[in-house]
Length: 129
Image (cartoon, rainbow, N blue to C red; front, top):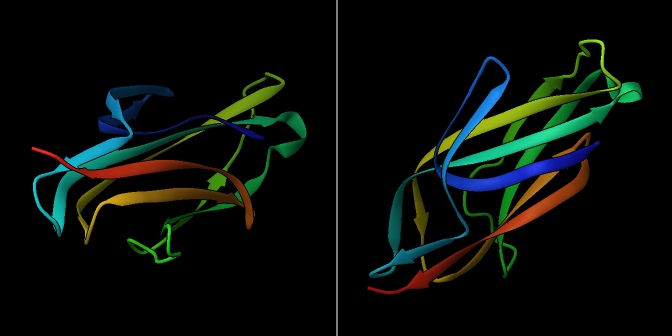
């Protein structure tokens, strides 16, 4: 399996197997700290090979550079089913509201599939005006 898309955005939805992703970004600019970001979406598109068509667990953790978690982990299951192709995709779309940051820096969002780290992406938090 591999992650084809792993991004933050302003809005996302899945409809009929298609993803709509609006306003992808990797940096939040805050006037002051602590700050609250009102809403962001996390979008993941995973591609599975034929022999991986089964149920998988996933977990998304957030960690800052000191190793502290910024929010509770997101856990769930993915049931991968084929439609006659040699591969299949699964989409994970999450909207997170009122994400709080104590100070600037970077928060890594880490994706685990079946308890193994698959990939991660950084979310940079900067002071600006």
